[in-house]
Length: 262
Image (cartoon, rainbow, N blue to C red; front, side):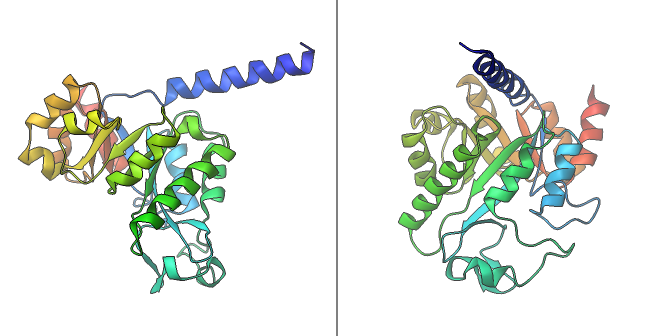
């Protein structure tokens, strides 16, 4: 093996070790919901909010993926952008309108590329939105999303979440090891595990209704995540129950609550 190939192999191993360590499940890990946007009034799901989450060294930063009419994968929470239905609009027409800070609507490629920069701590939590056109379109969007992330060599720092169970099962068929979390809250931890889904990421009200699912998830050794926790009292309840991840619009506040509990 020549020196250049030895260097490339060493560099690859180093990257894997760093991110396998930084993206390992941590109790009460903070996930910024749509990036860390609120404190500095950044647009949600913007490059700026992602960058701030990374700069804060948060455990994760969540974002949402849609596919446009011309097959561009873009980052936006709602099905509409500036009153245009994303799935029925071309990307060129969507970017005629800017985000509030002057950014254009980011593509998945641009977003992940930024997410890799100077990032040794923050997991990229990719929510794939169910298609409002058809189930099959949603599955195809999932496949294209995974392909893009693999093309960017970002699979080690990315996990996937969705309200569409079939989307997660579709991803599992093509990737036996990536982390998948289900959002809907209508399946028990045992059911999720039986379908080879890595974990649950339910609204906190689901866990208030089914507190036994907290123990069940831990007993079954699946990821235990919760969204979207903004109220201090609910934060404290979640912290005390030692969830793996806590998704919030208030990462700075949650960080203070966690530190106060130590």
